[in-house]
Image (cartoon, rainbow, N blue to C red; front, side, top):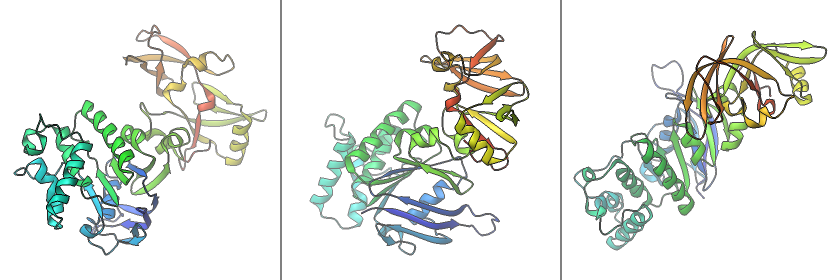
Length: 372
């Protein structure tokens, strides 16, 4: 078992008034691919380094495979870590870099050779024509160097793999390729993997579950689809998704027993019965209305004459091929819509778009928590 459990873990640095990580409780299941995601400075890398033993915890407990590891040094935690900067020895060949950790642990020569060559085969580094295993790191591309760093972790056969933003130094095309390779690696090895990134696309495409962090606090832990469709708060809603969710600041008005959202320049009826019950229970006035770009002016929305519409001015048009991102303004609000790429659009023109209300969200302005 390689279950990793963090209980009331926090980290405070001397002279810093606020803890970097605050009361983190997280259970990572055996063989799960867990992604820690959030903006820079949110505490995700510090959390990973505490699991690895590279940072001392100020309070709480961390257990790996049922054993509390608070006082166990990193080398004895049976984990392997892959860093952003590869951390390869430049004077050693690929083979020697991958074998180095096993030699320090006094593995037999034939066992080292078997593990290195197995890892090389998994990562596509065993092509005899290219002779990758005998090359030095300076003769490899960035993606190949990262494969070597991953291979060095694989040969250890640890209980858990820890990845600290391993793709940040790669170009966009190579990042996509390496994302797929690491996901395939997880399926093949069936090991527990904990992956840190600031890139929500990496998080959404790779994780079995995602832990969203902000200011050292866990905001929500869920599978990618749940995070996308049912965010706990405004921060999660805005962080997950590209382009991000649109937010409209306004007030709730009650007319004839029904609630309306009023932005100032437009008003929307929140007529669904479930919405009405939630809003009565919430007892708030100042709210934020959220709707993702694909739910503004979509084909599904435009086909329903009962849905509300919003008039807006086109500010920027970004053709993306399969879709067009259109930046619009309406009153005090600016927002983005994903529209059909064949729709004829002109800068500066006014356009009317239907809002697909079944996918709408509403957040409290005081706490930013989701109402619906």
